[in-house]
Length: 276
Image 1: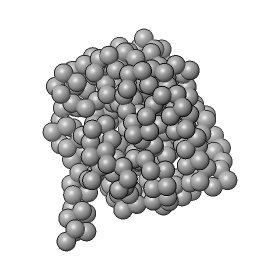
Image 2: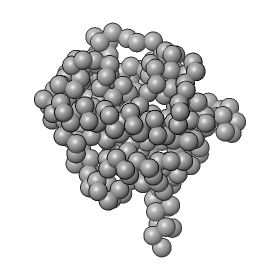
Image 3: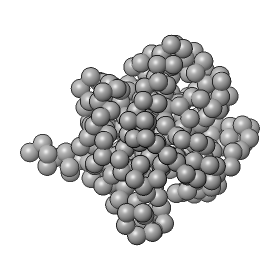
């Protein structure tokens, strides 16, 4: 992605991994594994050692059908973990759709806001991010987590999603968030059926037209089971890596993953072969 040299201080001349640190009891892949802050911090530090460039801390599950939680509960889950990881010098993002959580997470050391609602869920979100000068990842989602898989429809999934994200970027620029602070995420699995997901993944190179970094989150998602066998999330690593490499060959350089060491190794081998 030649026109985009960096995101959040990371050069994008190589793949960059965002490690998922879910501080939740109910996330689809690892809910309850790291609900204890000390365990979550240790998990994040291990991910960093394995090659994660960003640690993405989230306290509210957005899996299909998930119910919202209170702001206080979300803060109680994420703040100790963000503080712990930031104090170790790690680049931390907060995965939230609530402005108050963004505000307090930034104060605790988060330098990126990753919002599955593209800063639409909370009227104050854009102002919080603009004032703080943080980097922002905006994602496309049709509907909300409770309803998004009911019957998602598109004219052309790839083009529709890109048009939405382009519009959101315009709004954010007008509201004081610099363009070089923004990355976009097409939102695989968020209000999309298998055909939609495959269409978006196959057309990722079209995002060059936006001139913005693309964050791809395919890790352990259920579309993998609709292509191959229906296996639990932790048994979807191979499919996750295949989708990540497909993204890499189409220009993606930011990947949100659960399995950092495995993804890093796969991308490194792929790059070495291509570079030879």
